[in-house]
Length: 64
Image (cartoon, rainbow, N blue to C red):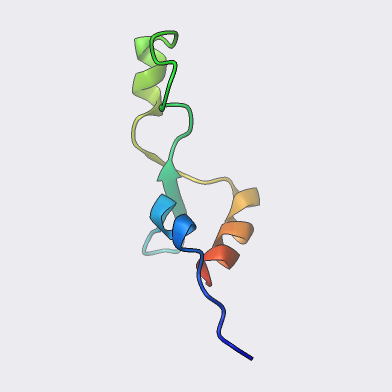
């Protein structure tokens, strides 16, 4: 049986912290920025810990 390959695209989008949490950029900061308030765009900057529901699927894609 061949080894499982990790999903390279997912590896570029998320980062695994030292304690094993999955961290990623928040969605909604790519386009239509003129419509969004400065407060909203400021809140969307930076990375966040992903929801528990997504973690299992993402860890499988990363081969962890």
